[in-house]
Length: 416
Image 1 (cartoon, rainbow, N blue to C red):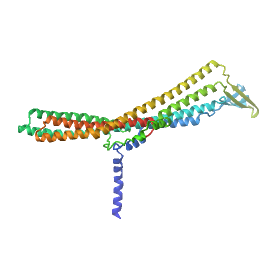
Image 2 (image 1 turned 180 degrees about the vertical axis):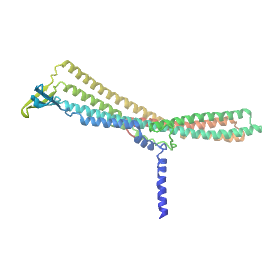
Image 3 (image 1 turned 30 degrees about the vertical axis):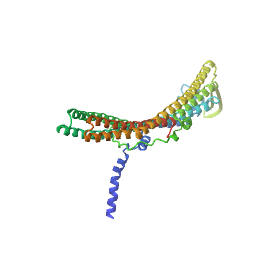
């Protein structure tokens, strides 16, 4: 029994440490997206704005607060100020402003369009942040893999330099080969310093997106997300999805609806507004009469009202034109990124299936020739460099697909 209690307490003590270790992001994109959804300050800001706009829409169209007017008629000089007993009559008037017919509905329409616009802006910001996160994760992965490839090349160069030193000391190699090996080592060290700086920059960018300190630890990236099959990247199908669910188009549509509401409200402003009043009159200690009141505006400044109405109509037409232009532009961007993604996919396939095998074959042949003395050291280094370049080209093509996929997801508002 005592041993069970000890194990249970140990598990409780270790649980926070384990949870913290699992909470460090960076290994994969889904974990980063979860972190972004929970802790992003930018997302939190637009969520608060959308919630505030929704509350404003609920309150729109309500009647204005009434007001109370108290009048004392025939006040005696010797009376206590504001005492009904010291006046001939006291009138209590309750005034209720009432907007003209149709204005409250138009106000509600404008407020609801504003709430829809705030919600669309929230979707736009979320889509852009997720696209940036995928982009930065791809670059983070690229920087990490480039460091690993550089380390492998550095190990080969160091081994080749030691061999060149030994062969030079025994007279089997020239001083030129030794110097070339040492220069190659120095170049690798310089390249590694540059890559380490790039890797630190990628970490800082990811942490900034996740609302974490720039120097906070990140897990090493394990793998890039899979790119959807070509059948899921059909341009016509994605174009339909873009028209139906693009956050940018939804935002522009909400902007158009807001302009339509403003135009309706401008039209309704040609109607008069009203103030209704009812007033019980007190004489002495009794209420012995009632007054009623009706007041309304006279919208006689027709030129001013028509100018506002024409302005609202022009803004509505401008918003509709922007909506159409946005759809055309976004469809063009979609086609552009689909073409670029397909080109990057073909480039990766070509590099993997043809260039890399040939580069490996050339390097292995140069390595065997160098060991037998038939190939000099410079040729061997050139072959190893070609192999390194082929591997980096494959990595570049793989990352390029992720970059264009991120843009496609931003445009259509989700994964293909």
